[in-house]
Length: 211
Image (cartoon, rainbow, N blue to C red; front, side, top):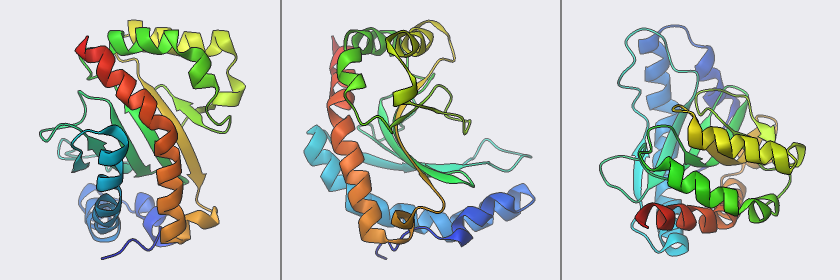
């Protein structure tokens, strides 16, 4: 299938009670769209990063009781998984879509990545000021890059480096009423534009890990 965009019906899955019922809706409504997005974006990301890219769609397999509040797909250069590696994410909460470059707490070398980003804060601040920064991939809360001064961004990166569960995610949010979401081609272009801007930081993170 081709990607046709996200609809109100997709966001409504997060208001379905029950783990099995919500997961069935995610698998039926959202995951086919993730697969279509993967077909569109995989070759693009391989070109941008000069890395093999593998698609991982969240299975939420560890859940036994509480249904997920969000769902996502990840693009990483590792076929076995993405959590231990810098990766791109596209996902949904009930009120927005996120487009992230994600470095989450499972990364074994996140201190090296944090040190590199601490040296590159000027470059990070040159990213679009409506980009968002999250310190916890499980929560909706995020701060705009514009709202963080030098000290604020430094504090975020220091926490990412020094706190065991510290994380650093940067990218874009699109609220459910954004018309881009219902236009498949427009959304794909938005994703590409976002990831083009983030690709140098993805590549830099990989390089810092290898050093």
